[in-house]
Length: 471
Image 1 (cartoon, rainbow, N blue to C red):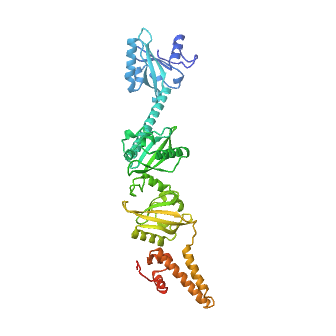
Image 2 (cartoon, helix red, strand yellow):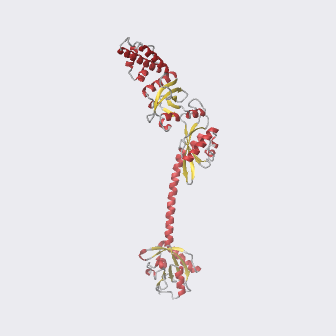
């Protein structure tokens, strides 16, 4: 007789007739199936886990027909193993319930009696299956993240190694190089294998002063997060700016060290001694290097302070005339004299800063023919504290004014004023011609008059003479 028992409580409907067997089935399984010698289902014992699942359709049918097609071979194996060995191992079976609901059940089959009946004891695997599903989803998510990180790392390595700029990663605690690109190896003149694990600056072949500057720079970056780049030499004619920034990796700190070629290296200026470059960089007077069109290629801190700029990058590429008090006149005269004589000394002018600070300066320049292409080196000296009036000119004008004073009473006031104006005007025209080395075009620009007007005044005051420039 086929029966279905619910073993969810002691007062459940039905029983095997043996209370001990009922307790064993209830304790050992969530679902128990009694199978006849022919393999058909005779009885079904359901626990709490399967109380809502219908099993009426199983009675009288072969157990193998109540599972999914993919797990039929497992059921056949369980039955055969139980008949031969008396008990089978546990195997997972997808059991089909009412309305086609599939639930994973872990079964073991044991021999029930001498008549050949078998008892299949099953455990509900839905909780375990859900955990497995979550595990698989988590594993797939990890795999996706892993490959995404691999792709990011591949792009990083490709960009890092293909970069033409020298870059190193240095541990902040012990200053050991943990990574470097090919450009860094070329800058140091060694293989990457030799460069890795080297210590900065001990393993860089720097002199004592440079090593101390690098240590101070790294200490400043470690404390404040930023620091001014320092110039270093990595060989004859090889000058670089050493600049570090601080980044964090997990719980450690790493310096990202960037080496930039110095645009105006010592070799470009005809000297391979980097100390000369350091001296100019730290000099109290301004220093600027331009191309032949007076466009800035490099400048020191003193010059940047005079023109009120915060970094050298803001000045590079700009015309020097941008900051001259009379950009059209002063720059023209300066370039003309440099082209003619190759050197200019104590050229007076004014610098107008970005924040409208005006400073009286003297420029001394020289052509740098050794550069490729040639350029101009200019020293800028702040002379705003000096007396602004030329003493010689003051004495000359004073003597002239004394002579004019003696004519009071002899000539009219109108004539005295006209004579005084003529003398002063002639004096300043002579000063402009002297300043521009008799270049009348430049002198006219300095005085703010046209060339024709200047020629007229030269004839009026009988100042015409041998001229080097009659444009």
